[in-house]
Length: 337
Image (cartoon, rainbow, N blue to C red):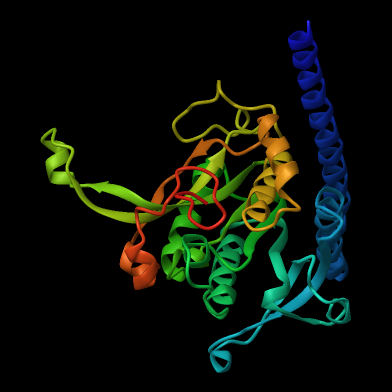
């Protein structure tokens, strides 16, 4: 009897949570309809952009722990190689809970105070995605590397993503997003921690980056002969194209639609953001685990980029691989982040 009761309660909680996310979707759709109409008036373009930022900011403020503050149009200051980098205005910056109150209203933000940052577009196209990938790489390249563990060296000091209400990627939109991301990432990112972490397009889908350390890379010539010989180990970054309620309308390149989730792109995006925040913040960890229990999390596929171990890790950290890696959730020595 108790087991049946627990099962009914879990289903009820999942349904209720999805209902709350559906309400957020409805609000975002209404915001897009209003802002899209304004965007047709040239004199209101800037106003429209700010309204789009605030729509996403309100979503983040509503769903993140209250300790995280959402700030708009801030400049993230570089920590290293200052003379070669001019900060650009970042549409949304999520401040860390420990960031001093005296600094929160300033136009410039110390990188150490940033938990996540986002570029916001009303309608995302190839140029907008490329711009976000470029800025994600540039701003993290000028933050001093955190050294000593896999998490510190392979993952970024803060996450960077791009958010949009709609898209202009045409008929094969999902595959076009993936191919444009891969091209821009290859052009701008020089290290796994520089790659763009999150993409959410409310009417199309959600993507999140997965970083895996010490993955075996097969000798291709031997593999074709039927011999599974590990040629080397490497780090891979994969932009996972999540299964969401939009996957049916915008199928994946492989044609798989039957496994599409009922979760919306917004709900998967929030879940993946929590996953990133929970990797270093105990405040976000319990709710992240709760989201895992509801199955509102990214499960999908994507093409991986391979990075040589020596190009990712410092010698001391490299010497600790693989004996210290944990195939599971570990704040500092997990195989996957």
